[in-house]
Amino acid sequence: MSRTAALLCGLILFAASTTTAQTVVPPEKPLAPGQVEARDAMVMLRDSLNSVTAAGARLVRGVGPTSSTAWLQARARSLATACTRSRTTMVTVRPVVEGGKGTSQVQLNSRKNLLASMTALDTSLTACEKTWKARSSAADATPIREQGPSEVVSLNNQAQAFDTKLAAYASALGFRLPTMGSGTPADLR
Image (tube, rainbow, N blue to C red; front, side, top):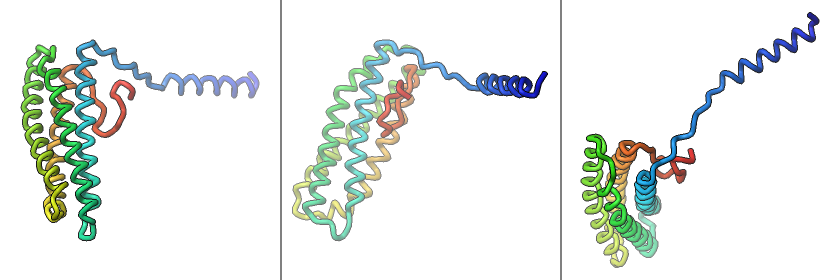
């Protein structure tokens, strides 16, 4: 065997060994219609919560001793609007969760936990809406400067805790949700 033939055989064997070492990940199985409805509703709710955390982040980022009252009021109005929008979305999503088709004990427990979290989060969003709407029209912006950042952190923590329960419920139903804030549908990853 000539050197060229031996080298060619070696290259072929090397190429074959690297090709077989590749891992093929099969796509996720298609979702049932009930799973699609639940996933779409949960992603819609998560997106509305993202708007709340984003509005809160914009407010916190700009709060300072030199921030104008008009600027702070505009950020407060934006946060109030995001809380209102999220509450409205929760009203449309709640029946989807309540009417979930899951019958296993894990699914039932996860649904129960999620519904309890939805009730608690709705209370927080109602308070957010009321508080920030009032602050957006108040002449004095001191409460926004002094209490705003800590209240936003608390609201964000509640949104993150809720997101954990939302992901657990999705998992119990047999699908994954995209990471909060990723903007990528789970079935496209």
